[in-house]
Image (cartoon, rainbow, N blue to C red):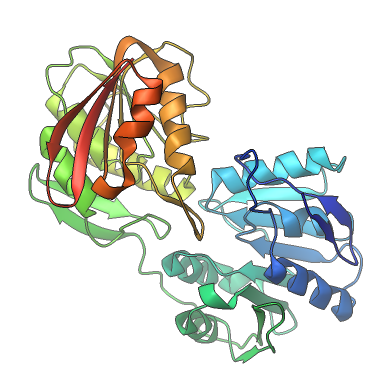
Length: 374
């Protein structure tokens, strides 16, 4: 794998989850550009630095021994990647404070470094929360690969922080230099809320949630086909998002025991609030994690999943295949994985390699629902 070689460190970095024989690497030219610029700024040693949306820990691991680093983002997998890369490079975790996106910042900060996330609502919420943790002297630099750097990201930086100056491009990456201004304390528009008709639910969605403004069409197709008459089955909603699949399953199966997991902290926060609103104090386990990795083998009767087809900006079925493998491990003999996916992804081929039986439950022009039995 390529080595990240910067003025701050020389690091052997791994993506997480790891993919064998993958050409993808755990850093890009935007990370390199950012670190080169920070070296030229001559920040004092032990400066208080906040890093936002560090996908695999390249920035935080590089700066861990030079500054007092806080790393914040909405991805459990990104935080696990950072921990793994610190260990892999024999770096102490003591110098880095990892903050979940649902936890407050701990400023004031001398410097804020931002990787522009795919979900710009997450960026907006982060900038709103940043308001009381910076001042006119705070160095603020955002970065991204040009193909993933929309003009609206610069507009958000200017609206909430101050004037933005773009750098020249370097290896198809660009930096955005932001000059903090004294602005009124902003009001956050998040969480947003939308209504579901059948069943009637009011669903809250924090800024990092996929399809925040309306139910995504794959899940909409899935809901009427969810299994019923489950008795006291142990059920997991894998990649739960705002929790709607698990909640509807629980409403249809009053004695089922639900577990809900997602790698997005804001999804988990949304799912917890939505569960309480729909089901009150009914017991449930909702947590941020690496899929079903924390579940015991042969412990679940049913897994429900609308799998993602991307990790950050990278599109592919790697995460979906990994979710299927985790489900196969966690399910009891005879247990079932129910999924909804785009027809063209051909999930049935992958599922047949892992499960004893795969049946199509329903299909329309765009989506298909499969039941895979262990």
